[in-house]
Length: 278
Ligand code: 9MG
Image (cartoon, rainbow, N blue to C red; front, side, top):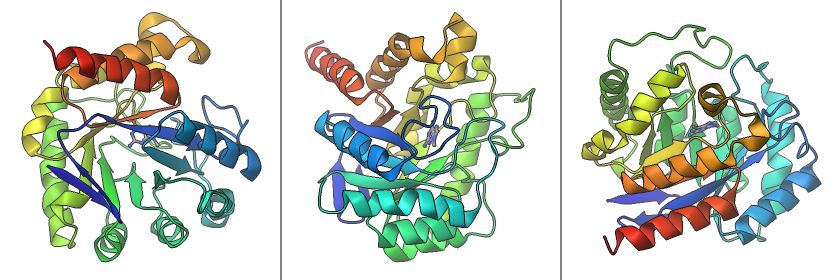
């Protein structure tokens, strides 16, 4: 299995790819706006790359439940200077975390190699046409609702089966839009329109998505379901985030999205060394 994103190509099996999170938002749930300024965001991105990130996911609109939407001009003003500031300074792949095709287009022109689309429930398929024509990588994430409209009491009869059916339907439509299978990674969307019980069920069943034959991306870093389950604040969620990363590595996830690159990389590499000898 391959994942192709612009001029990057990863062939699996291989060590888990670590995607570092670079939030350029004043209302980000865990950075609290510290990285709002371009300079600080670029410096943070360079630190994550030095810590061993394989990819950097740069986003200018918070996807935290209830977060206020950001206009296109404002989102562009937040993220584009970060892409320019990183140009020629990192060799890792840059990802644009956006739901807006216009932002994705400008970010690709500024150096992004993939689009992290947390609104893969979209119509019309402008984003997909962009991905098809540019050859960018694409993360197709499941969500019930948008950050603004996520249900307060999400309901599924069978969360694992419904997310799997969603992937099947999106993969068909992505193919129709001209996106090649090698461009697409899948993500169950932990925390996006799901209760902590739904999140746990999806985490427990991660290996059931492997038969879809696409790289799996997982984002659990510091998420609120950890706080709800264990009663810990955002700043205290690293151990549980690492436990999930270790679990995901054991179940064959290919990409882990995290705020804590050095710690996650260390936990994942140790897990891989043990799995190779088990
Ligand atoms: C932007 N963002 C926040 N959480 C995420 C997750 O779990 N997956 C992906 N792909 N993006 C996320």
